[in-house]
Image (tube, rainbow, N blue to C red; front, side):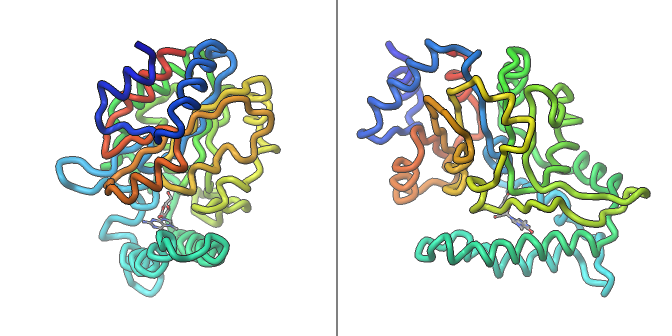
Length: 299
Ligand code: MG7
């Protein structure tokens, strides 16, 4: 039996649109034939590589790791957590509004990210506090992600983590959980929002290029070392969990095959229909990397 048919038969929560079956079959066949030397992987971080809940409890995103505590305070004595929640309550509904045009949402997203970054600067956070918060956090990789990333690194297959979250949190998390993954090493890269610190390690600002949920496609990766790394690798596996994530390969040139794998967390039949139209393979409510590992191992 072929790879796709086998995955679909053994994983009833994995879906491919009927009109895409032939395409996905062909793409997989061609990627397997071309092998690892032609492959690279682009992955979102929050709730794609990480779990969104465990034992019925929501797990934090990279932002959540810093906000969800009851001691980091702003200069007026209020809690960072409360001010961040206010921003979330104001802007998240705009982010997920299905009626509103993306172009209309973008100014609000920029406002949200800038305000959130500003709160971090005002909170007198330091690099060592952030590292500590990450190490103590409940953020957790999906089961099998470690194996997935280690397998890529071992075969020198490049992986780009493309995140609108906080790059520093991802970096500190990997330092602890997957030390082989080194930011901007030959095969492992992170494009995200990075914090700038002063000499004492105090947070002073954020990297100039802001990445929010809807510019992951625009964001030029051309001036990053990753662009060189993938120059001769025309096949890509894209992994995401939001509709904005499908654009992540948008800035890449000369791609031959792209396989877009979407994690649909908290699935509903309506969302599944939308996801099946934009992703090639949709994985519903799954806290493991079994399917990406099955595909990678075949290549
Ligand atoms: N997201 C974006 N911002 C924030 C924030 O300040 N706090 C929290 N808790 N979440 C935020 O990883 C990207 C995702 O993070 C969320 C500024 C957005 O929902 C975005 O999709």
